[in-house]
Image (cartoon, rainbow, N blue to C red; front, side, top):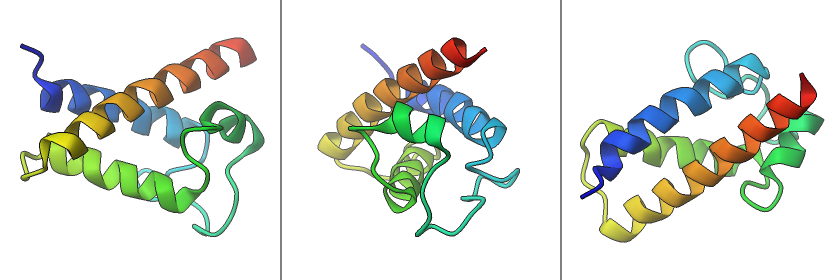
Length: 100
């Protein structure tokens, strides 16, 4: 059986690293700009259809961190965060690979 929390924790680490590299998050893992602002263009394109604004990203990161830390989450929330994080990570990695 897949340990969704463990897998999500690994993905969260990689996602945070990418977002720090792109200037979306600061070194503390917090949004590096006004949450009412827009993402950098390349990040916006990669997140299109998944995350529309920084407020939604903050919500997903919060859920992922709670899962990683073992806090109680409903199975539906855990599954949704797992799927969304996987898709976002793949899209960002693809966008970064294409940009290099």
